[in-house]
Amino acid sequence: MKTNTFILIVAAYSLLLGLPAVFVPVMASEYFGKPLPTSNELSLFNFLGGYQLVMGFLGYAAYRSNEKTTRRAWLLAVAFLTILAEIVYFYNLNVRQIPPHKTIVMDMAIWGLMAIGALFFWNKEK
Image (cartoon, rainbow, N blue to C red; front, side, top):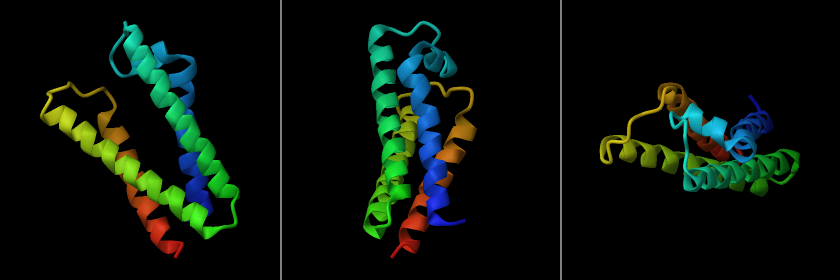
């Protein structure tokens, strides 16, 4: 797989995660097991969805870029943020005892592959 293909896949995935969280946060909340979210929880979904949309847009910009520095910076940001998200989620599950949502195994696997892939392609772009 080429670096640009990986970037495009991750950017599309970010857009797919971000759109429901911004435009239909109640549905996104139900997916994570919270059928009646508070206004603070809806606000959080909107914030996180906006973040995902921006990462998707920046991924598209990196995909279109001819500069290795731009692609490497985006890949490193994806790796760092994804690893941090995995650590936070692991902490929430094991220390704060927050119950897992129904697709945790699939989500963690995708995030893990995304982080490893981002580091692989970041190193490949030297």
